Image (cartoon, rainbow, N blue to C red; front, side):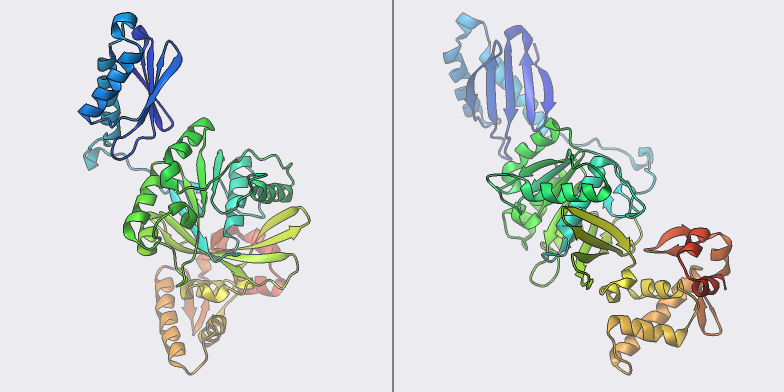
Length: 447
């Protein structure tokens, strides 16, 4: 009789009801060496570590079982059970996804977001210097997904789900998770919620490849929807700039089969650890930067979009993070009001200035140069003006702006449609925009 096979987390469970035998197979290595726990009449009696495609190894295993529970006394054909177990596990480990014809594949509409415009239903990376706010952002997103909380202060839409936070960064043997719990509870208080988070926290020590089965079992045990890894460098356990360790790490992350948010530090050159290998392996990449607010008990963080697959370039997002006793309050702010506004790309700076009202071309050049710290009458200024000219031409062609007697402004049809692009590139009803602008600015926008 063939076994009944159940997949649970990282393990395969094989049952032979007629022989009252069960085998649980896990911790399967690329060499196909595995941990096999054998049960007879519901009681465990042998744990062994055979190589599943080794005939000699399997022979040793079934003979060991037969010595403990001889076939003549217990009626169990251990040789058949071991061969069937090895065959099932090998076939499933080597199983490929079906081969299909492209003409038969159903197209999916648009990108699948876990948190709109920030995190996809795949692998998303946030990297930055220490103290840039990247881990705090991970805690905010974890709190939102776990609680289903959404607010106009955040201007984010998220898909709720159970979150697993894997933490290689903070250590507290006496009270594991204390630091992350304090952050998440403070954020929940900032939401006006009771600090009763259901985020599943696990302090980690060994590299991910050594704990992969453990993590997969956690995902299964707690019915996890989203995984957060903090941080990539400490969880990798190999050369962060070498191709194979980084690529294998991303293969391990992919084997979790869950949307994953990765937090990572910058390398010495100010880029992403793992260089091109990390960049290519992620579907969405953000850089977090701290901006000086000049406000006590608060900090600004700006997120710059560095990569996405199958979606347009996302606008930079700015946050003010206020720390008040045991409460953390996140609120969106305009990137133009931060010290990092000069990092915006020229096309976005053009739009940010024009949305405030019509502007002369020479004034636009001076404003952008000032933001980027470029002095007039320099080669850098000339290169910048050429880049501005190119960007203006493209925006005119796409009807994002129009030029009239050397004055740049929003096209009339943007106003007629009852909406304009504003605050991070999101669409805002005209009536709402009127409430948020002064009389002079409003009249300029209506021109």
